[in-house]
Length: 387
Image (cartoon, rainbow, N blue to C red; front, side, top):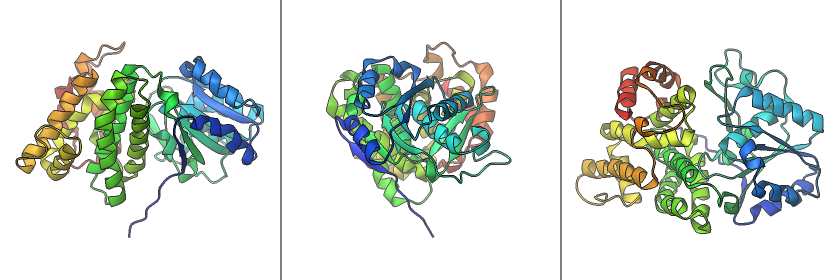
């Protein structure tokens, strides 16, 4: 027996953000808490969005930065109560949207947000009605706007915890590609690789969900075509629209679950505070090469979908390998580091980090649906090769 569910209402297209205020008024929301990150809050595009809400009485919580942590959620929930808010507007990248969803939980429940994480030893259920929540993505990567989970890290350990419930779904998503036009090329590339990884890993997941398979394949096709254009010309509205759609498609598809790329990325974000999308981008071809023996047919199909050189001729094994090689070349085109040692960030991954990376990756649940079983020694080999 299989049970299917698909997400919320989506208002898609340039100018969609202008529909938010009328939508909230129609639903009786007049005092929304607007949740965003500190970087976006300082930009003209955010000031313009607040002007769109001038007929309401909003208050801004912009205490989100980096990978979202518990303290940000708890502070946001306090801001919700102090304002007497009657709804939540999440606007930003995946971090801001994840925090917005978690704030909604804490606005209606007692305790600590990490007590609602699915793996907490005494996990608390989400039983109360949550505040009305709408989402506006400003990056095309996580797809958090259509997701039913929130990833929040412990402040001290930085270990990521997942709060999951269909109640976390936004009541409406306003997907406006104009909100992504000023995204820097490097962030466009990193978030775009996140979207591509979601589509690829959900398609490869051994779970049975043909509806998601179709969405994932189309999402991968769109990303393969649109991402280089969006990186090269950030004001190409068509490419930005396509990437916003690919991002949402990947997030919808991964209700099939993900794979070992994400377990590696979660470990890298925990240990080195590496941007999630960038971590996926660095690791994807390494993990896909590892997956070749167990996902040959599906990798060969992906090669056809993305128009990889050699992806439409030869043996199935050759076509599958063509997809992995295409990923390697695609990364180079986007200036995504080929290896972890090529990353020039403030906190570079060191060989001494491998033991902890392996421990965190093994404990992560995403690899449970990787097409090839991934042991601790496999993760050690993947991280070592990626270095």
